[in-house]
Amino acid sequence: MVPRSAEIRAWARESLDGNWGKAVGATIIYLIAAMVIGSLNYIPFIGWIVELLLAGPLALGFYAFFLGVARGEGLGVRAVFSGFERFVDAFLLCLLMGIFTFLWTLLFIIPGIIAAFRYKMAYYILRDNPEIGPLEAISQSKQMMKGHKWRLFVLYLTFIGWYILGSIPLGIGLLWVVPYITTAEAHFYEDLRSRSAEVPPPPPPVPGSAAFTN
Image (tube, rainbow, N blue to C red; front, side, top):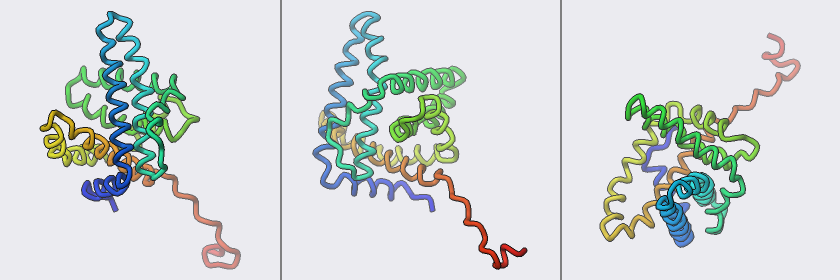
């Protein structure tokens, strides 16, 4: 049975129970790092290159942290920087996703949005599979998201009210909204992963059984 958005949000709240402090702390660290990297854009050319190099590893660590929250792994906030352990793969994943999404956007806005949803699970897949590269992570994400892109879109829509409320007090509330959404997204990935797991073949028939003799 496909879980509804309300169920996924409930899973996220359950995972965050007792972990809100770490989740908010990880979000603050990520946002500060992202702002510092973004400020480098003021440095002509070099700043843009540095941002391009660091954005992928930082995103991989951020998603890895909240996947750990969803799984109850008890990761520390330093996990936000764990993406740098796979620096090259994370950088290439970010670069390729950006290129592919941009190319689809050239056709029209809607194909670009669809492409972004198609690649949405790639960071989680890369985190879970150290033996694969960025192209394979993108390919697996495309396969995993078949028939589920609308479900993820609806899940995001259910957070609009939270976004509005979180933005009112100078955006401070978003420090709680972002972990809530990201943990829900991690649970969405976990649901898709369980559905895409290969079903083991049935055991061989026992000699003498009807299935064996027919």
